[in-house]
Length: 85
Image 1 (cartoon, rainbow, N blue to C red):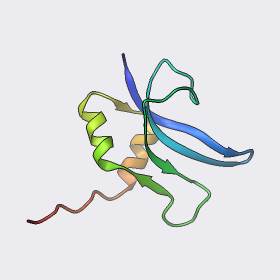
Image 2 (tube, rainbow, N blue to C red; image 1 turned 90 degrees about the vertical axis):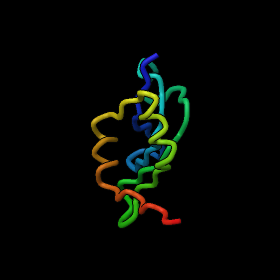
Image 3 (cartoon, rainbow, N blue to C red; image 1 turned 180 degrees about the vertical axis):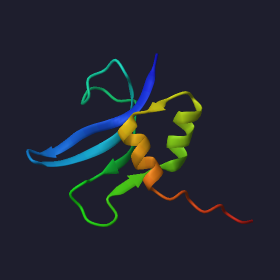
Image 4 (tube, rainbow, N blue to C red; image 1 turned 135 degrees about the horizontal axis):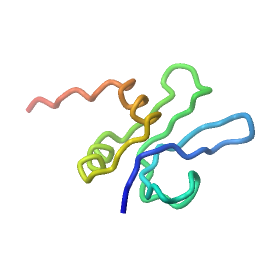
């Protein structure tokens, strides 16, 4: 099974918002998903992207490939600071 990390569209007509999801690449864009790992709202100013970095890294480690758009969004967000013990 080929797994991809991509966007699914939510929201009203002409007011889009998106979920960043892990899904089988053979499924429809808004079809069944394995797990939701973030939110993206392009209409919101400022902080418009929320990601669960731990789950995202888990799925990438398992072989999931992000779509071009999701890869661009991931690069845009700063990486979390390392925790000092």
